[in-house]
Image (cartoon, rainbow, N blue to C red; front, side):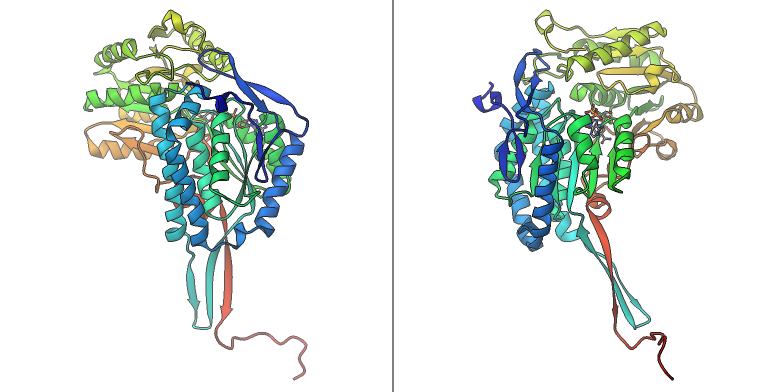
Amino acid sequence: MLAQSQQADVKLYIDGRFVEAQDGEYFENRSPFTNEVINRIAKGGQVDIDRAAAAAKLAFKHGPWGKLKVSERMVYIERIADLIDKEVEEIAILEALDTGLPISQTRKMVSRAAENFRFYSRMVQTRMHGEAYMQDDEFLNYTVYKPLGAVGLITPWNAPFMLTTWKVAPALATGNTVILKPAELSPLSANKLAEVIHKAGLPNGVFNVVHGFGETAGAALVENTDVEAISFTGETVTGSTIIKNAADSLKKTSMELGGKSPLIVFDDADLDRALDAAVWGIFSFNGERCTANSRLFLHKNIKDDFISALKERVANIKVGNPMNPSTQLGPLIDQGHYQKVTGYIKMAKQAGCEIIQGTIPDELKAGNFVPPTLLLNATNDMKISQEEIFGPVMAVIEFETEAEVIEMANDVKYGLAGYVWTNDMKRGHRVAQAVDAGMLWINAQNVRDLRIPFGGSKASGIGREGGHYAILEFYTEPKVIHVALGEHLIPQFGKKK
Ligand code: NAD
């Protein structure tokens, strides 16, 4: 299964070349399934970030990238999509190997990643337009959108390829150059993207990848003065640190952060479909999903039946080798995260929750497996209901009235997503509008149109990705041009009468 190229050391990609870190250091990359070392990753630091940022700045200012017509630039963007399409299987395998996500799920994500490039090619050609105003027939004022320059992209380890392309596609399509700092726990698919972009023939320095740790490589990218903006996806605490560190160089920042999203089931809902959605929403992607419905609110009239059905599902979820096409739940990313998630389950038990779990077959004991877990009899004020666990663990909370469940849904620091299940459409809209979150779904699982903004409120983020938000509000700046069409009055200071 493991191709020779995947076992080889992974290098940095700077100025069109795959290179070692300046000091020649590497760190080990481990398999979530066995905890054995898969390969070694070049450990970039400040010097490497500075080289990559200088190359990106030069490529933006003086390279051919900035001079291309939009239609010419889009040829490259669409070529990247076509090359990803050809490599879907290999990238999906790499991603499953590196992250522990089941291969059936990584295949779907990688195909969607190719579509991100095509989508932004279309968006830039059709939606990147400004406004124009005539002012009293004397002036024409109009706006054009200009790329920022070299931008830094910092990504997390969950669904890394998909999330990375959400940033890289709009950044490049709008004409910026990029320095990508992937998560140290999931570095493999980022280099695959570098290979694809290299093959697509983008000019040197337009796209760079520097692997390394957050506190060193990531922090150096945030502080680098050649970098105009940072687009970050990751934990809320890291986001706040990055905003502080970006302040000295007055960088523009975009923050996609953590979540603790509610799924609310009223007693008139289509319970079979609500069950499918609740189970998929917390146990897909190993529960390592920012929009996971980690708090399930059940109306007291349907709670017992719903929980019985949930228990049956939990007992039958296929936990296994991420490379097996029938696996539904794989191992968590690393031992540290395994300790964190199991720590929350212990905490739930101490707080009085009843713990319902699936089982882990003996042959999987070497991996970071946490079985699908329900925390029954939870209350919204418990730590396990307030903090992001980021694993296959769902707190189940009873409610009686609409007002009470809205109050509880909002009584949390996060505001990323929310899900409402009811056949009373007036109530569906009312609750969706009342829950403080960036994205709400009524009678639906987490499906989304790429044209729609993605992002959260409160501690879940600042700004939005996706749609025209990425191209008009983050990766470009509007420039205003005022043109005099007539002989408007210009005060004549100092002129002799
Ligand atoms: P993390 O914050 O630990 O790391 C994310 C990235 O930031 C990594 O590349 C890391 O190396 C880097 N980093 C860490 N410290 C840094 C620093 N001081 N300066 C610069 N960079 C630094 O997050 P994670 O554990 O990799 O990812 C999981 C988190 O991401 C969860 O909280 C999840 O909810 C969130 N997430 C949010 C979204 C969203 O769209 N809102 C999507 C996916 C994941």
